[in-house]
Amino acid sequence: MMFVSKWCCWFVLITYCLFQWCCMVSCDFVPPEESIKCSSGNSNCTVTNFHRSFADRSVCHVADAVFPTTELDLISAIATATMKNRKMKVATRHSHSFPKLHYSSKWGDIEAVNKGGSKGAVGVASYTLLVGPHRRRDAGNRSPWKLMVAQRKRSYNFTGYPIIGYQNKLQSAGGCLTLGNSLLPSYCPWDPRINGPFFFNVGLNIRTTNLKNFIQDVQKLVKLEPKSLCGVDLYNGILMRYVSASTAYLGNHEDGIDFDITYYRSQDPSSPRMFEDILEEIEQMAVYKYGGTPHWGKNGNVAFDGAINKYKYAGEFLQVKQRYDRFGLFSNEWTDQILGLKEGLTNYKEGCALEGLCICLEDSHCAPNKGYFCLSGRVYKEAKVCRKVKSSNEV
Image (cartoon, rainbow, N blue to C red):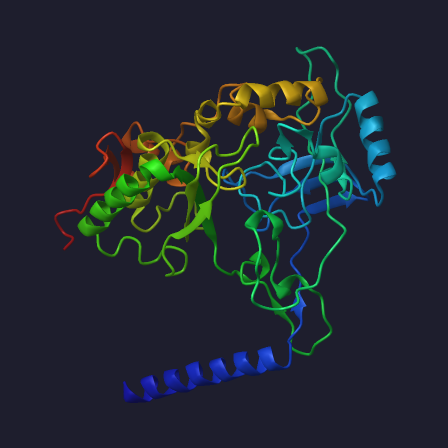
């Protein structure tokens, strides 16, 4: 036993030293694979995110990819697709969106609309497109929607700490996105090629008037299960960010705090999370009891259910959307669902609550074969969560 412990200590020490040396000699990283992959030139493509897994673990299929390098090229590509009545969508190179929106929080086609008009044309100007197949105008005979993906071409060098400025003016990525020629290549820790950490992120904004009561309810839950948040955000807990009120149509209209909850996600969709019921209750409490609004690039389906009704300027946003995209070429089933234009956001099936695709209504929506059953919340009694029920043989 002492021999094993001794070698474990040596292994940890050597690993630490190698890491420090790697940082000193600036080990180069192998950048992650791009989210767009085509099997025939720029045609017959698939689109996914940085984890190679969206909230519902689906893969989006794309008919054609277009990579404009100038705004004129982009406008031409959009015009061509519009004349052919083809579906289009925008996304980033590595696509860090958990839902199937494919947009950057700064340049995306959802949050880029405000009272002053649309910034979409400016934001999309330096991106790349993918377009769908020809589509009939007959609503009864439409081809499945396809994506148009965009890739930002400009980049800025990091000049060092401290990083000071307004959050909406900052956008950064780790050095692991930079290709190098070092003898010691490394990868982004979340790169699926190295079987790194697989996680999911819930991001909800609570306005300041509800903060105290929400935090106190979370504390009550943690008191019941003291270890329940130990593994959140790789042991860093819940991240809280102050966010000022916004004038954007789909922005938060009061000052509040964004609560980011990052947790382990199993590669097996039928496997529950650690403390599944606690995390579900916190999410439902935030969304339904305290009127939390979702981060548009995070969350599962539950957080978006009825979310559009929480924005007092949602009607104005939909008017702008109709004016700039009256044929719905930049829309898809998912965006129509979260904007309240189409039913079907909640997907009831076996195990759906484990993935955040539904709130359980019956035990089959959890994992009864693994001891997880659909029960009421402990603090927020209106919540319905998948809770582990210990058998008589368990301590």
